[in-house]
Length: 181
Image 1 (cartoon, one colour):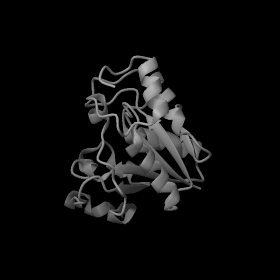
Image 2 (spheres, rainbow, N blue to C red):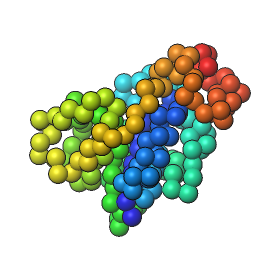
Image 3 (cartoon, rainbow, N blue to C red):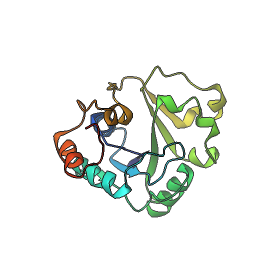
Image 4 (cartoon, rainbow, N blue to C red):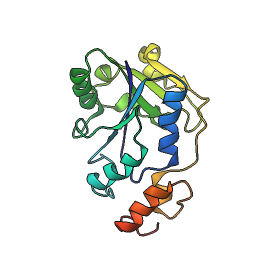
């Protein structure tokens, strides 16, 4: 089984996130997508509680899209992948990232261990390969045919909720999570 590992803050989840999940499955890149919302993020301080983000992500769950709350308490991606390898020893793991991460991916902690798995890079901006990752090229799958939606959780929090599904909008309003939505 091929498992896509989609880690992020999802603060809040939006149509762009869902399009990533659907693309991975429709293009037969993976058999299952595990969504791992992070309780904390090294460069973000405005996250709503993880329980709220998990609840919103549950609206996206399907047979092959699963919100994983068991493996999301690690501070580093390599630790998430290590734990998943222990729980899914027969599976092939595919870390899913946007192309905007390529510029600094070489700075991620324990890169060697991350690249014991494959990494799917989806177009978020023009895909520019990082020469510092040359040794890992055979472990990377670049997909510039991903139809990126120009939306971000920051834009949503700032009031552009045109790419937020109705159930998520309703949840946000009922729980008073973001003041601009």
